[in-house]
Image (cartoon, rainbow, N blue to C red; front, side, top):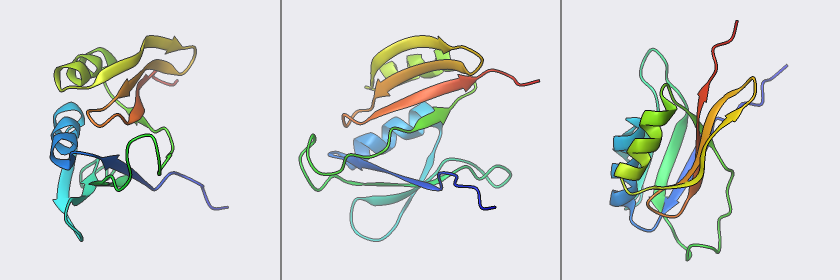
Length: 126
C-alpha cells in the first residue's frame, strides 16, 4: 500500500527575499535558485534526513485572492525558541503556545508574507 505522505509544499510571497531570510533564520532551511525569477527550491533537511522538498515563489495574485493552500505544520525541537525566533524575524504569532494532549506543543504563526503555518514540538513516543 502506498503511503499518502505530503511530498511537496509551496510558499507564495510578495517579497521573496524577505520570506527566504525568514525561513533560513527561523528553521535553518536552505534555498536553491531554479527556473523563473523569484523561484527557489526549499530543502528542509540534510543528506541523512532529507525532509520534504518545497518551493518559494513570487505571489502572482494579491494576498487574500488566488492560491489558498494547505496549512502546514513544521516539526521543531524547541517550540519556545522557535516562537521567539518567529517574532524576532518579523513573523506574528496567531495562536500562542498550546498543548495538544498526547501530541505536542503547538503555535500557529504568520510569516513575513502573511502566510499562516504551524510549528509543533512533538512529545517523545514510547
